[in-house]
Amino acid sequence: AQSVTQLGSHVSVSEGALVLLRCNYSSSVPPYLFWYVQYPNQGLQLLLKYTSAATLVKGINGFEAEFKKSETSFHLTKPSAHMRDAAEYFCAGRSQGGSEKLVFGKGTKLTVNP
Amino acid sequence: DTGVSQDPRHKITKRGQNVTFRCDPISEHNRLYWYRQTLGQGPEFLTYFQNEAQLEKSRLLSDRFSAERPKGSFSTLEIQRTEQGDSAMYLCASSPDGLGGNIQYFGAGTRLSVL
Image (cartoon, rainbow over all chains, first blue to last red; front, side, top):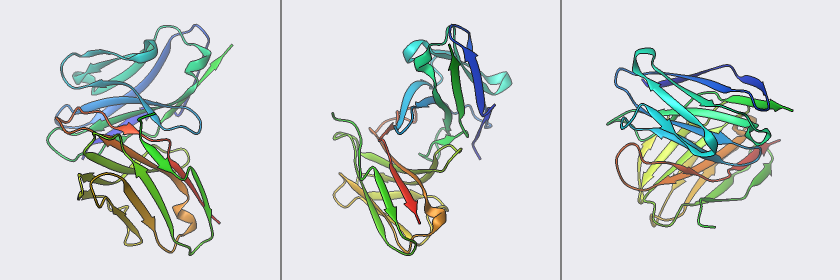
């Protein structure tokens, strides 16, 4: 069964520092992968998605993620953190040719310090 | 705003009462999903509709839970005889038809508190 693991429930960075949020998936077939962001009391907003077209995916707000099959990873990065990036980030996967459901990781809460 | 709309945003109820939530998807989206999110966890899939047909249900969806999408537009999620463990954020999402990479767009959710 598809599973998604996010390493680190909390990540704290300084404003202007690199953001790295880790996500690993478990699947015999590379799945579709997504990163969503959730601000307090709001729904989830899509940052980016991987659908096998390109291994380096660029998203909104300066975020990008690289799909590495050999490491079964899909880590999210941003070169320079802004205060407005403080939120909770969820990695999610969906199996190819299988269930329609998204399987989410437990989330990583990002804090950006001034 | 043409995003996914959920009503109510917050619901407080007493244990044993029935509650119903409504979701209005993006108008041209045929697919509709319900998820549940508890504190400190990612969303967990509950059920999925393709138009009015409920095609997939999670084991999380006990017999106290029922979801409908009678005309293939809005959907309702009803919880009967609520329990404290039902306290959570209930999220609705919709997506267009297409290949598996189609994006699910989420509403702001309904936060349920069972006292």
